[in-house]
Image 1: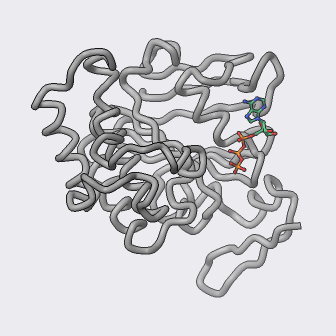
Image 2: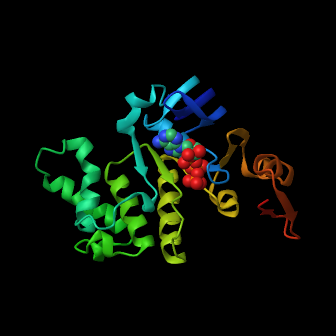
Length: 248
Ligand SMILES: Nc1ncnc2c1ncn2[C@@H]1O[C@H](COP(=O)(O)OP(=O)(O)OP(=O)(O)O)[C@@H](O)[C@H]1O
């Protein structure tokens, strides 16, 4: 199993942010973390990376503690978390994805540069290699960050709100890569506010808000009553079988 959380609580400096996490993620599957702002989605992603604390229960990543599985995981942070003025090209950002393998103090080899180029190609941005990262659109920057994670050839890829502020072209490019990854056996954990997207792309959904409210296939988790419980809001059932959430 790629991920196995059992009665886990995660948080910072001893204070839990998200409790009662019980989930499993097998290889080649996509798990979406859904929940409102401040629900603890990023904190759970950081727990998998060993960047937030597991305060109770157990959290296994590839059968190890998160810190010991770090090299098997790739991470695509929220675009807004990065400083766009940092003076680097798209290709240099992607090359950073190789540092964990080669050590940042060692010179990159042609194999690393080739892997970085292939990763940029894969997200449809080969032409943008020499362009300054901060001058790319939000969607293009998100794709560059995806390419950086791909360059490390992870077996588990974590993506924090990968579709926030991303246009349709970039969203389609990202979705196509994510589908290729799961077909090749890579596991995905992504957070999203977009419940329709979670329903469409994920094999499994974990609904969180301070605690885990539900975990399972989208059809079982994203029900009107499940969403009402987790969000504490109202939902409207549409004729096409979808449920729309009305924030309180
Ligand atoms: N480094 C930190 N130290 C202490 N508390 C934090 C830290 N990062 C986040 N928090 C708190 O943890 C709670 C959950 O935040 P988190 O970012 O995990 O939620 P989220 O579901 O990802 O939200 P959003 O959808 O807004 O990104 C918030 O109350 C936040 O203030």
